[in-house]
Amino acid sequence: MKERTLYNFAFGSNMSSQRLLARLPLAKKVGVAQLPSFELQFSMLSTDGSAKCNIHQSSNKKDKVFGVVYALNEHEQALLDEIEGVRYDRTEVSVQLNSGQCVSAYCYIANTLITDQLPFDWYVQHVYAGGLEHNFPTYYLARIKEQASVIDRQTQRKEIELSIYTK
Image (cartoon, rainbow, N blue to C red; front, side):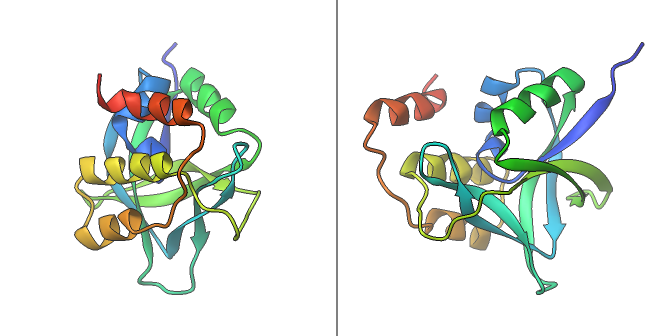
């Protein structure tokens, strides 16, 4: 029996294939995609006390979130559910690949929102690395790079997080 393929729309740190493949080695990149009428924010309260990426529906039809669609098997989807945890709801969205094809994919939308916390610098680096790797538009990359952040006082955590880029 053939295992079902599920599509994940990654818009935060999992856009970086190095980060995602370190977590889910069997994931396959399908392509870069856009989610219209949404905007990227760093508004999810993480268990480490910092902000992480989230998306919000926008009334501005010109807004869009860029991301990467990955094909996952059911086991990897279950692992990703565990990694993302209960602070995110797995939500089905319709995204448009750069090829023009529309696909139904799952993404994780936060249910624990904050406005008074910043992401760690290493987290913003993950998000930026993913956008850079997948050739996102310059204006979108600039918005990610300009995101205010704080330095993680747990230097070992930062070293571990960023070590995937030096292997």
